Length: 366
Image (cartoon, rainbow, N blue to C red; front, side, top):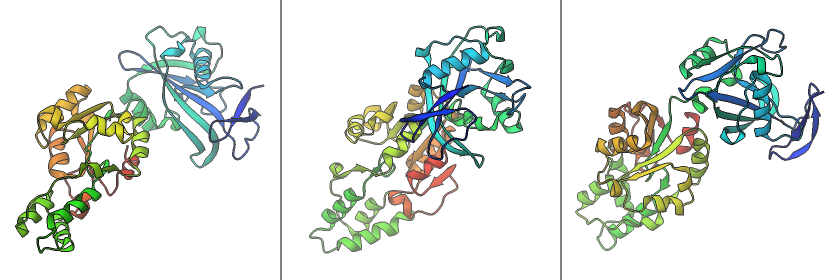
């Protein structure tokens, strides 16, 4: 008789459960999937035995329910030993992601899924397995696994593989201003200081900026020239991340490496840290430190070299077509145009691969 711990949505143990009995509506059991990756990049997959009640003879990765009193990691190590006879070192495991699944394919699931990745270059012998759950195993690369998922020979609840375990996309690079950070207060103060004592009203100037923004990536500069005014300083102290920025970064950082490619003054990494979002970035490359500015492709190439990432495995996310989207796309990066800031006034463009009206929408893409 297999007994599981029952959890609430906060992963607090609230009781126990006997396998095969109906789960309470607002309670969850803990499930682990374990992807075993060889140093050549191939993954171990296993074929379910013919006598398994669910998905007989279909292919999958090792997985199962965590038993009462076990941690997620302990359950993962045990499942691998039982199913494919491999003794994994717990310290080598990496938790790829965790999610609550109330339903899957429209059917009640009520589980908390933890997905683990372990390195392993040793031999695999089913003779060392302690159960008969697996008929055979093989090593496949990610493209072969994705084909099996597409043709239905692999258990369909593993469709997260391409994004979360071996993604085509490895890095997401972000601009800062009007992408992660709200600059509206900076512009409002700048408009007032630009027009103070000039005979041009704040509203007249702002309306002109908005009008020019439909076709220009620097409408403030053009409005200043149109009225014969003088540029005023930029109040960087008024910059603040959008309210949704941290939540988006937290979600994406569970699946991808995140980086910054931005035209910024010195100290960008510290400013990101001060805003509480610096910890989500594995690489911060700003023009002040790089010695080159967007749209020069050299700054993008520098970021890709430091990340050890090919252009086709990277995405550039930004609000400016000229600085962010066009040069990245010319290098072979995928692109997401975020229509925040002045970009909100521009017409749709066929240049970016994807266009979103808010950074929040990017989690629907990646």
